[in-house]
Amino acid sequence: MTAPETTSSATATPAPSWRDAWAVYLQPRVLIVLMLGFSSGLPLALSGSTLLVWMRESGVDLGTIGLFALVGTPYTLKFVWAPLVDALHVPVFTRAFGRRRGWLVFSQLLLIGAILLLALTDPARSPLFVALGALLVATMSSTQDIVVDAFRVESLPESEQAAGMASYVAAYRIGLLVSTAGVLFLVSAFEDTGIGRNAAWMWGYVVMAALVLIGTITALAATEPEQSVRAEAKTRGEAAFSRVMHAAVGAFSEFLARKYAWVTLAFVVLFKFTDAFSGTMTAPFVIDLGFTRNDYAAIVKGVGLVATLIGGFAGGYLARRYSLVASLWIGGVLQAISNLVFAWLAYVGVNQWALAAAISAENLTGAIGTVIFVAYLSALCQNPLHTATQYALLTALAAVGRTYLSSGAGYVAETTGWPLFFVISVLVAVPSLILLAWLQRRGHFEAVGTVRV
Image (cartoon, rainbow, N blue to C red; front, side, top):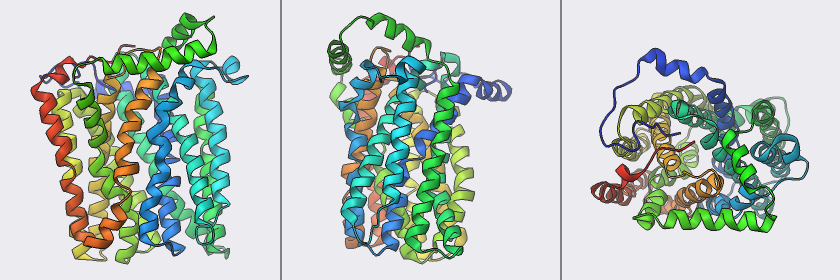
């Protein structure tokens, strides 16, 4: 979430005391958001980087692996069905749990089924079925994201916005680490029992499906956001079709009527592109370099987890301490230049300390950039009648870099070699920084208000 002190002002605000800064993280609403962040981060790698390791070990070529970034299409199109989440009720679930919580539980149950289906596929024999399974996981995961994002934006008072944002992103990254390094450890452990590689991968995915229940239990323990209750009361009595149209048309027309809307959308698309372009090929790069699966998993799970936590809370502190535009500059530059560490690693070769440094830099800067970026996106969503739709539109556009622009990363790596590939991944950040400077000069960030909850 975004800090109210910083999103509408270009000047820095006094830093909060460390005691006050940490106390807010223990608020029940912030803890709920933290657990939902874990639930949102868990499925992403299961149809992304973790799946790519499974495919690479099964002998799938790099070109095909790069194209599998396209299975993330639902993350870029989720705004299409987000109005349904804003406007429609899920039979039984909405009546039992409320507008947001009903959709949360429903989407999580469907996500569990999709992960189990993907677990039954075989990349070596049927890559098409793997793609279909991954597509289902991405669809259910992105639907869960729609609801979690709306719940997060609507449930926290402004005094808890920065803590909620930092907690959400840190937990999201932890969920992502569990579904990457955690799965790799599990697969190795299952293989040690004597079962085959493909069966080991299957059971690793089954465990991940079970972990989705953490989010379901959290949703059941939470309370419906007051803003959602009021928005539901305002539209009660309207026909379903009318509610959907109001959510869709209102969300898009309100946003596009803003000054510099199209430049803003372009900036949203490109800000995380440098991170996504390199991140798509990080796991295949480490495996190709000669590290074992367990080497990679141990460092990601250990050093990477610590770096992620530090980066998440550092990003929250930056978003609270500095202006939004200053924070975006810090995050944008850091996440770009951190890719050079992988270019250095390509020359160093198989060295555990070098791998630890590279993974730490990636997780630290990626978490900082993500927290600050989430602060910006949250500040752009200001109407509880269509929070889910607007936030889904923005995050869907942000996923364009990860899904479409990064789909050719495998071919670039094959053509250039790994060191030059990671240098190129730094240069692709330049367009987003140019747009950031353009918007800053025109006062865009001063005009962005705080999240009104």
